[in-house]
Length: 395
Image 1 (cartoon, rainbow, N blue to C red):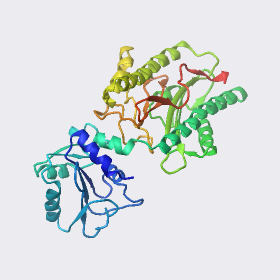
Image 2 (cartoon, rainbow, N blue to C red):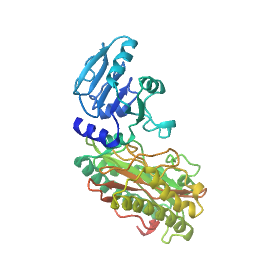
Image 3 (cartoon, helix red, strand yellow):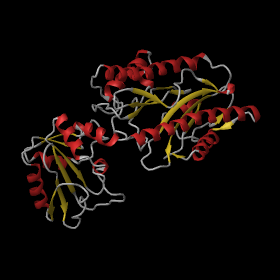
Image 4 (cartoon, rainbow, N blue to C red):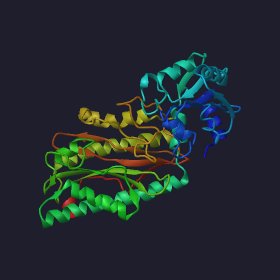
């Protein structure tokens, strides 16, 4: 639901005179989400929607699509020529000194950088500065409804149970025929999802030995994809319910095909687990102290543990990502490596913490999901934390 009062309150809180939302042929999916554009909307002309911190919103639409924003409150201006667009836009922005747009200085955060440089130049030519709407996007795109939280928790039950299915299937096949293919394990997980009315945008990752050392490995594509006794296995899986607005659960765990896990695997796992737990503690400490915390700060806290252990170069991706209706949502990510994530972690949002160490022989990642309640309580979802590599043949 579009909540004008809440948006205007947030604009004042973050120090903006207004929020200028712009889209051209789907170039700004974030604006479309915030404005609750109708399902299947495919505009062919530029539109602008300006929300002032106080006062009446303003719409600017083309004459052949005059009803594009009719579902929203506010006054409408219609343009035909590009000169008219610029004239109307200057009047709409008015005396504003700082407006929010889907922009990131120096493209430090490409996830929210959806407005082209020329449009930013145009707005600035009116004597108005442009700031990043990143925290506004996090608040109004990624804060979950109670129903979405429940959908995530239900999905978490399904994904948590999927690991038990995977480990048991591997153990049974090893005992009966001596091996199992990565793709067969993947298929068992997908079947489990289907049986529980869950779906996923892409198959899970099942990586044996060196394949697990590739963070975005595609199951079944490695040089050796057969799992045997004595092998190390990484499983990364994600799913959500088949209901509108449902939110994902996204978890990663590791196992060893044997009854006793060799120390070399446990040693690396414990470093990764300590880094994971440092991330949770960083968030908990900040919220307990009522102190703002950015995604970049949490990434630093997690990465510091792995770097101190001497594996900094082997942790080659961000610590985590926003989790919502898409696996990689549009809210705050835990990243100060690939991007400069200065957005705040906000109550009502959900994200992953998933540090990893990727070696030529094997890879370890431990991924959990964290939800911040509206009261600032930090909740780890997805079942019990993995505290040791799973000995698969004991399953």
